[in-house]
Image 1: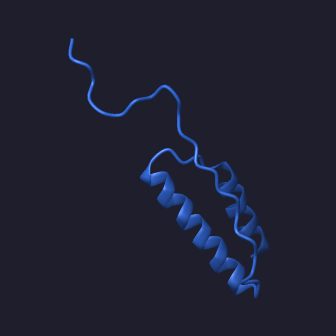
Image 2: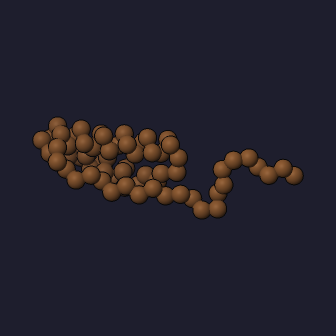
Image 3: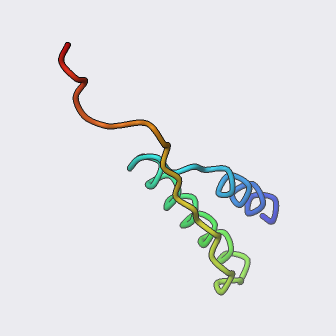
Length: 66
């Protein structure tokens, strides 16, 4: 069980949030970590640090007309 928690924490530290799907994945991983910790009797484990990154230079929307 400890190994599963370690794997989830490693994945949490590698996730970069760029869109809603990434944000959902991050929340699911956090819930998974909390549930695994609860099964081990550690419900008060500290939350993982979450940092949202935005790519620079990329714009969303339509392409400019030529």
